[in-house]
Length: 67
Image (cartoon, rainbow, N blue to C red; front, side):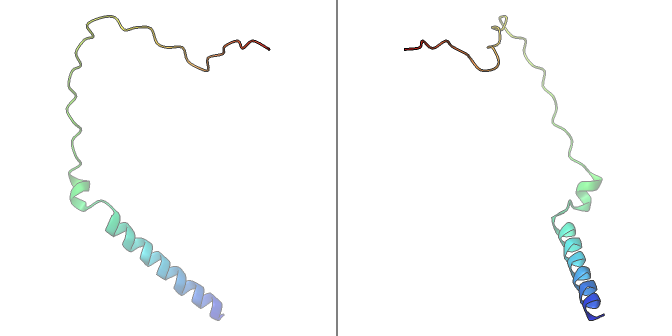
């Protein structure tokens, strides 16, 4: 019976520490009420010339002569 009481006390202690850490490291209430606004999206300039074709994907396999 004593081990169950000890386990209950230690469980409550761990829960209290976890709850305190959540309050300390969590977002403040002002951050929850006023979330930051996303940055304004700036229009991108059109490319001056057509882009070059993309490089091939994957490994490049070259033939190696057998000596």
